[in-house]
Image (cartoon, rainbow, N blue to C red; front, side, top):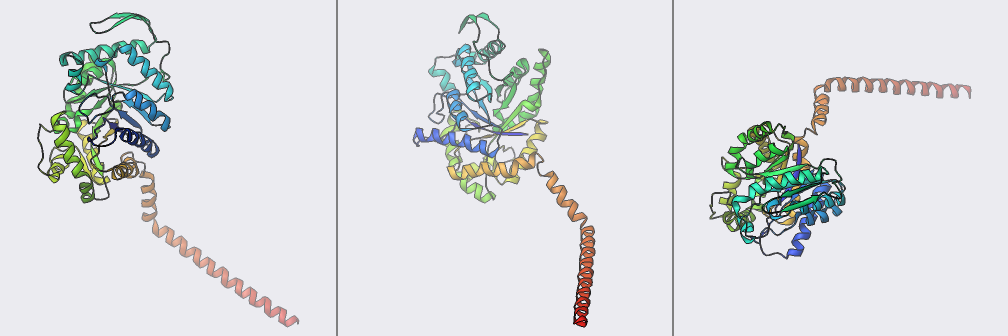
Length: 395
């Protein structure tokens, strides 16, 4: 299973924006060093909490600081852009990153973004659909004209195709079937953002069915290996430590931001930080983990069972804890969670079990060896004594 992070970003208002952006770039570099597979960055234009307006610009900078981690636009809100220009920027980014781009798209998550651009929210999903089809044709090298109510192409063809032979397309999916349906239509990957909400968890069991039905309708196929499930966590050595580190930031995150925008907890605000932690990570339908590496391992196994299987765990990047403890949380995931989930330690464990279960064999061999050594040493001493005695008799 692959592991990555999703940087919306969600940063509380108050910090110097220049330093915050540098911190986000440092996170990308840190995750690359830790061996994470993917780094996703979003596009937003309002709220004050989500300050990255261009994932392509951000990921171009991240590409210079990283070596192997895949860089995903998570997501480009396609209805906000001319599809030809999106395709051009992605191609350039693919070359600048040496072929590490994942093209994630969505209709636009924030109603406030659509409002300030004067866009009808009812048109966003259909425009995303239309734009994906056009960008796929452009990436294939086709030259064509296209008339739409919101953009026009005349004899359009990219003068340079992506460096990757087949750049992966990924669509964002919430608790509605639209994202999964789009995935089946175009044979794309999926990143399930709605899994972070309790209602998203219950809907995950049926989500993949929509992708398969849509794929069958269009004569395509879809792969669970390209299904990414978004989860939230803060990990520490103990649950009490994780709670103490994360609760104040989580409390502010929910009360100040998510309740008024994305609204994943039915508009509920919390009275205390501990109440926020209990509802987010310790209720029956909780999807987040605030605890130890083992807690996250168990939750991932649970998510696999609920969904029937997926290909990547994407951790939601947040500021629940301070930078030092946040960095350590990702470090603990890399050190203990990833190797356990991916069975990287199985041969170590097998070797240990084999040695323990056959210890009598090793002990007998050791005793026999020790006995032989003692006999050899005794014989050597006898020979040495006899040799000395012989020398004396000659003298």
